[in-house]
Length: 155
Image 1 (cartoon, rainbow, N blue to C red):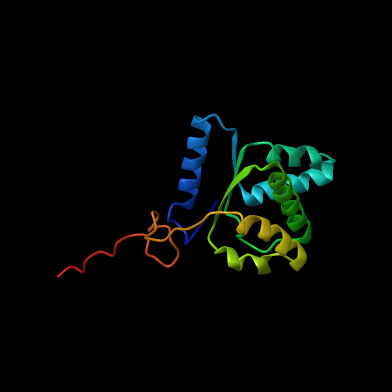
Image 2: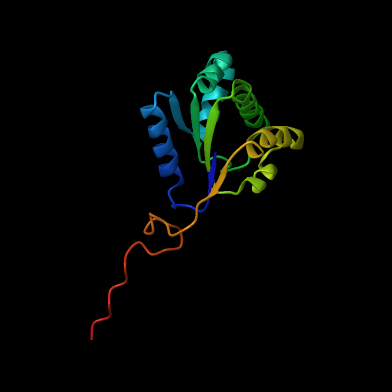
């Protein structure tokens, strides 16, 4: 499942609620920011624990990757993400992704178009996509908005 839409509409909240429901039904769930998962896998390359770390992300019946496609990926990050998605797809494991970008906008974030096409084909064409729109639940924190209500001028 792919939950996408603007900042503050509740994508992460809905993803966490889905994870909570899955846990209540006996599933093993892991929730993480995509950037943290990629940093963890990168650390595995450095200390030779990459395969073990990959298995840890592939193991849960539901993996929730929050803030997917936030920024451009390096080639090693794209390769790690490809391996993770492929491993989970092979095992038939479920995923929930949250993103501020619509899936069609993810392709340019990958340095290798072949890796992008293969990975995103697995994700996009086999997923339910939910566009979430509406007012931000964090209006005071949203960029471009005043943090406080302006005071009325005194007469």
